[in-house]
Length: 359
Image (cartoon, rainbow, N blue to C red):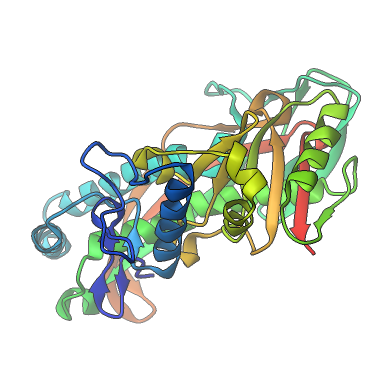
């Protein structure tokens, strides 16, 4: 997966990209350019469109792309050809560290669910605030199950997340541009995106238990927004996050009622995580800035989600592990790494989420 390249050209880091008018998206103070609230929202729209098209990378921050790419490639080639030291294994550890940072910074699952401490030798358990409700847990990579909650804890089983990322000898010989960056994104797709899809499986499984699927006729409007907020509050649950596909941003920008109340994020570092603003205390997050291969939501999908303490939790057993792989891959010479972790996750209250879909 080559997400840092488009038509043979390297995508521009968002911090140094330009609008269609030729202005920088981001000023020297690290803030997005915008004369007022509406102009700032238009800047976010353009940045999201360019990021989604693969022209801009909001996660990459380097300025001297030619120098960075040359250095990264030289480091990768030297480690690939060195079978006497631990340079290749060290590269894998470096990538694992970058993926771990991305999980906490950009991953939906880890931001929407509360992290629960898990000691070695103990079984996972997640504290729930409300009893006599229905929880939904992940029991395997493709199976979820509901459970009526009568205690203060739920006990979701652990599942393995494993991503195998390989660098083929051909990629080294043919001079691929930035191999290390490409492999980081492959690892991110195999770990962080998998976590986010697990959360989405659970979220979709709650539909119809307490809250039916909400069809948004005419898109997201102040009226439908208010209705979903009121529905959640009827259960004595406070909405904390609106997670939405990128196409809903146009609904917000084009509606003057939203524009008067929506508070867009101006700091680029925050926007690059997918957090674009807030409305009435509800934070808005989107995967619209992600490359298409890292997206989790389908167009027209939107979720109202409670505060993590009321919504659910997850456990893990430490940072992502990396193991060197060396050998044949599909009848081709290759070296690579396996990245692995053990996690558990569960939504502790089906009332803590409303799924909506564009009608």
